Length: 212
Image 1: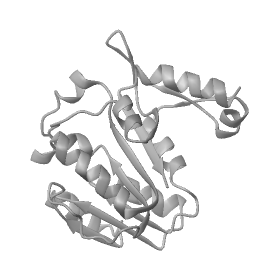
Image 2 (image 1 turned 30 degrees about the vertical axis):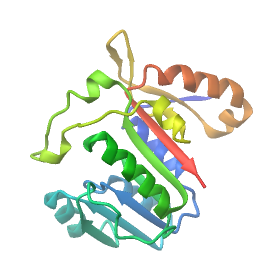
Image 3 (image 1 turned 60 degrees about the horizontal axis):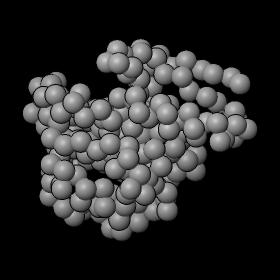
Image 4 (image 1 turned 45 degrees about the vertical axis):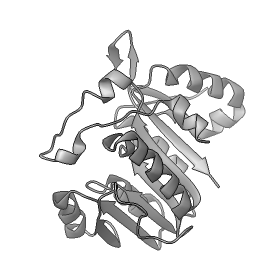
């Protein structure tokens, strides 16, 4: 069994794996400085990717480096979003839903599902007390955490969940994440699923995907 140790942002590799190779259109909700947009540009061949965020400096940054085909300034508390149903293959919300009040975040999840044709991908904190401690940073008042979603809640919404970031055992951070290669996962699928479910109990973040 081949095991890789990932010392970079551990969730990014998994998120990219969940974005199909044939993705042509992608909406990145809460795009920030365009990490997802940049990865899709490099590793996929999209025809159109759109970013949406409320923080003007992030929007300016993304426009300066032309990360997205289009970047919109928008308050995610105001729904519906200005997109037609099933207008993007993939919709991503990476570290976004926790920045909204719980009911607004739920509405945004349903809105993302309306817009997505193939899948919605979410990443969000998985440890309640750690998540709700975060205040604003990066001079961005919208970075404060206002709600919490556990991996169990996301599963109830129909999402498949994966370990997304560093692991915490007895309050101590393990500074790397063990990830198993895709061929190995297929060969040992049952074992991989069991291991994933165990590690989710200690993961600081959850990555979730709902396919259509």
